[in-house]
Length: 223
Image (cartoon, rainbow, N blue to C red; front, side):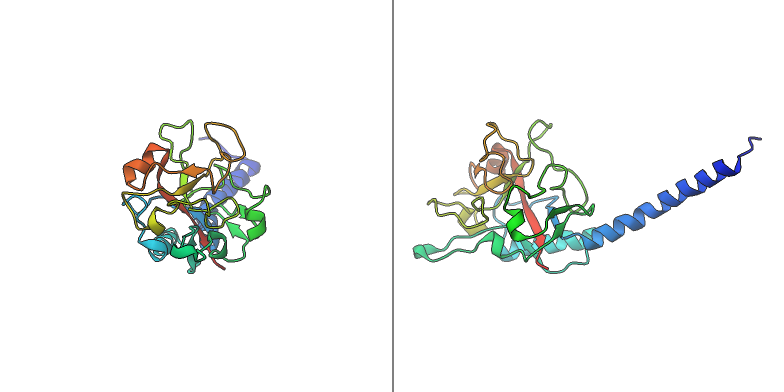
């Protein structure tokens, strides 16, 4: 029979302790999570049921993941007819700071979120389950994240449909998307934007996939 030294025994106990603590640590960071990319879209293209439907989807995914936060908002802008002011994504999400499920801070404030200091990368812009979303170069590119916003988080004034009819269309229209991995076909500042890279090919699920998406969007706890 192999005999263990006191040092070996101590290391074994420490290792077991780390293993035992891992689920607890994960549960704690999950409870404190205040930002994620949806692990699944609504399944109906860019028809999210409007802002209310998108917010409800964020809340349901967060609850299932163990988050203690309750006031979840989808990072989505909308436009209004007749030249009236739309809704800005940046105005919906609270003041920050925001952490992903691993406890990594993606931004300390709204201003930081919309600056070069934002910690938005493929490694940090993960789902509520802690999964990395596939991006450019992976087997399936899904880096297009619905936002309907310009780079400052405001509703677009570019003209035309930029929000798939305010997140109610699964057919006609288009939506501005960002690249969660901040990689594009051309390595320009525009294509590296996490929230405003280009317009989608359409609003149907297949159209979103065509340009490298899957109907995902960002969720923030408006704390």
